[in-house]
Image (tube, rainbow, N blue to C red):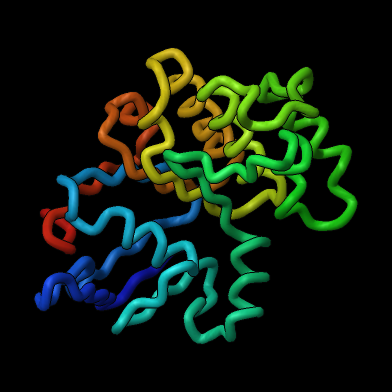
Length: 214
């Protein structure tokens, strides 16, 4: 499902080179629930963005669902990402001037209104569909982000600290929704410091200085 071979990514900061990903190789099989942990600056978010076709590496190859994603042109890669990968971020990244319904429908493919209604019901957001993000609790905002990630029935969900801004009850709720996606055959990769996802994890990966810490 996800295959990284000798992937490198260098950032330049204060005249120095920092290897966010250092000749990293990793394979994640279809249907895994992978938790990634590591100290700040270990490359976790860079890894997630690279898998998600959002950050081109400086070296190496990245394949998702059998597609070498960085061999695709920009427009083709964007279409592939929309159809195959869902994202959930710590800071929600909802559009503040759109309602819950409109935020969910932003990435939606055609003829998905009925599915959007079902997802809103499943996530307990039906009564909030016409509210804008400022009127939502943090938990409701993150559930909206989860709904947006699910709308296109992706093969993979990538979640970057999805519970970082939530209280324990709402955090547990978000993790359970990710676990529900996994139970239906989806692949989940989640970066988190929380241990709440561990019970669902098929594997826990630890990173340090751009490498898998084995």
